[in-house]
Image (tube, rainbow, N blue to C red; front, side, top):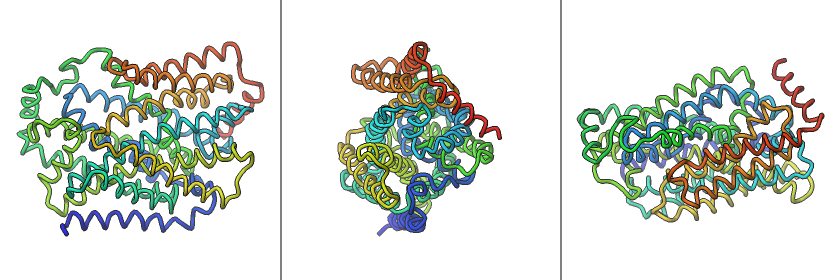
Length: 483
């Protein structure tokens, strides 16, 4: 057994032990889903960013830069801007508002905030969560399959199942606290790996000049404006930043922080992390062009793994390869937890017509994790699937469906539940239609979806504003934040 395998097994064992550590602290629904709203600033920051960036940061983005050159850097710029705006304008208000409206999930917050008497807003948003998180989670399963395949020569499908089983184990046991603490460990591993490896590789790659020459030979450029870059393509890639306002697995971190006083410190930590991570991912993609020429068909997404195995001692390589698995797990575990909360807190309670007991709710949440994971694994069994393609679709779906509802919910006192439902449905359908018609070739589907959602909300609000009770509660929630 190689040293890489031993390190990997030790790392995966550690994650399961963390799940066992928090098992007895997840005996209520709030503790399982939100950790009793007790996260500190460091755990919140690392957990939010690790669950955000995932395997696509270490695999999808380097692969995109490898194939597309500097024009793909606009994605990173858009993500940084979106991260900063999310922490600045959403984090504090969402923490206060979800507590004020007694909401453990985003779907419940929408219903309670907009006072939807039909439960349609809660039910439809929960269904959207299940649909797009199945796609999103499957991207992580694809990434884990490629990782194990590259490392150990395992069959791709076997690798997908092994990775999924480990993630399910600690999420099933420890819930939100296990997910957040493992995410912190994973976030540290990720940032070390993605900053150290490019530094090790830059000399062997001949520096950025050699990388640029190799790109030029393939018709690419390091320049942000090189190749076939147009104003439309820049807007399309920058628009990734819009997705942050609607990502349930990231927003739930804001909901679980101990106090709004922790948020400025968390924001600083998170932004430093993001700058380092995105810069490292871009450099890995560029430096891989002269080092590993001719990759395509999804193999371009393995360049970071190839770089680690090429430059690192087996002990260090084993740790850094564990960091890739960490990135994959840190997002999937969050998505599984949010999806299970959608099933138990939103759909199941409405279906049964009454609130479940604490024990029933917690165990239903745990088994929901298994069900959703199985669906994601089945979707991931096709080895030709790419991480970036799945992530971009799910990211746009959440951003377009939920982003405007979050922003209007936190900043507009007059938005009605009718406007919220209409905007959410139109935003989600726009993304699906735009993608399947093939228009995403010209413009990333989040742009029309987000715009249509906002326009529909404004249009419906013109004819039907919120009831007086909704406006009074909005003012009271805002006052509680300033108290």
